[in-house]
Amino acid sequence: MGTAILRGTFESFENERKMVQAGNEKPRDTGAMGKLDVKIANAVHVSPARETFGGLYALSNLDQTFPLVVEIVFAFNGEGRGRCSAAIETIRESLAKALVEFYPFAGRLVMGINGRMAVRCTGEGVPFVEATSEDDIAALGDISTINPAMLRKLVKHSDGAPTILEVPLLSVQVTTFKCGGIVVGIVINHVLIDGKALTDFIACWSDLAQAKPPSVLPFLDRSVLRPRQPPRIDLPHHEYAPRDWQPGLVVDPETKPLVYRSFCFKPHALIQLKKAARIATQNGSSVVPTTFEIISALVWISRTKALGIGPHETTTLLTAVDGRPKFDPPLPSGYFGNGVAMSCAECSAGELTRKPFSFAVQTVHEALASVTESYIRSAIDHIELNRVLVDLKGNACGISKLSQLPFYKMDFGFGRPFQVAPATVPDNVIFVAPQSRESDDLVVSLGLTSNAMDVFSKLIQHELTLKSKF
Image (cartoon, rainbow, N blue to C red; front, side, top):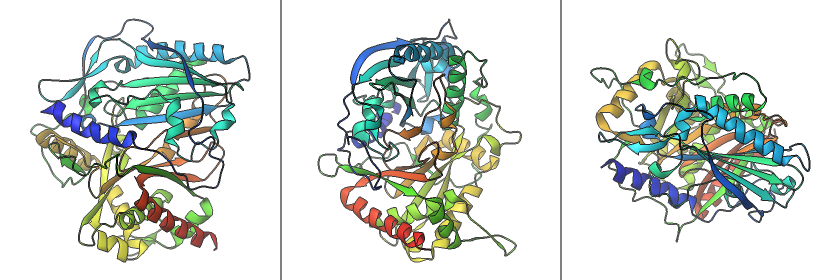
């Protein structure tokens, strides 16, 4: 049953990825809008620099619930014309060294006889693509304004893979530009790791590229997140859906293509939004909500309205919360895997859209606060007993804060990236990311059908325009 279920889940993701991609909301330059010329020069597999563990590498229950792929591009100014060959060699050789420590990346995802995914550590290596462009890197424009038609030329994606099992655990593409600029495109199979684990790997990789000792080494034993014996479900877990769900709500790419847009939230507007909603505490006082809580609430309301969800239907916002610091003691430093748990904010669409903005903010805040060690342990046991996936279907959507991840520390010896951005966004997921290395602006990116996106855009722009006047 496991492979069939994964196929259904992954096909819904693939349908979203193959749709016509267009749209941007911000007035900044967005480059060639898909016309970027990129040519593949070489494609190899990079294996660990020396022999590593061979055999099955067990994955945790949390890992089993994320059959998604995440694509991220890192844009560097580089060192100018004529220096790209040396840079590519440095990136490739340091990757081979990093894979000695992070050896599961070089293996392949398999389905065990127990219906659980695991990694077969074969040492086959990571797909590594060298590509070139006759354009200057300035042709990319502002990559924070999501443009999958262009940005996905800069990653080694796995379109056409029948299930998540066939997607490499890590893929790398290095694209060099005529001016000497460089883009490193990274694709991860979310079953293996989350964003925090990816940044740990990148830290090690870039240290080795600069001939430094690794600042982070992986903690590979995932048994720290094993279920309790016997498993015990202490709390409700509406963040998960049974694995036998039917993907009947998948958007038909032939009739309802998704439109992708990005929305820029400036600090001043966020301050004004915070003034409109304070969080009530148990002692009767109130506190100022966080920036992320404000953005989450506004996006949740606007998306619910844009999709026309009925007032008596339940609408759900799932948030990826790093569970590592929630444990006592915290998970070991460098924990390599999915350490995220999903908070679950839910209510009727009528409540969400008709009550004051502070209601949505409070609901998001309380959901985030509920993610404790007890909550995560209960979720792990719930997965053990019920074989479930993160629910990103129907009236549910997820939001992930990429802005908390130290992607801008990546340095292979030719400087840090000037921009880091997702190449695309999985279906029913919303990304919040910094606009650039030097900016305090935050960018929210998502995909919706054309009609829904038009409504969503008007709602968001109305709020941002309103708040900018104060």
